[in-house]
Image (cartoon, rainbow, N blue to C red):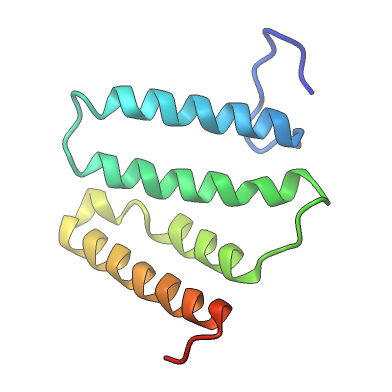
Length: 113
């Protein structure tokens, strides 16, 4: 764990506790930023939060790797900035991810598609 006052370096290995603190700080500042930012930035920040949450796997061996979430993170990281070029494409990307997550939920729960 970093000492009080130390600022975690993005991309640098850190403890799960540090990761959770950093994600919490990101969410807090994102919430505040959403007050004055364009509305479409809220979904962008939430997509980034999913990516950062999945990064928690890289901080500990206590979690079983989740190939689906790793794939989703990769997709998010590759597509999240579509919002800057086309809000419609970004919304379509989010809709696609929702379908993928819904299908995965069905698979994990044993429900038929």
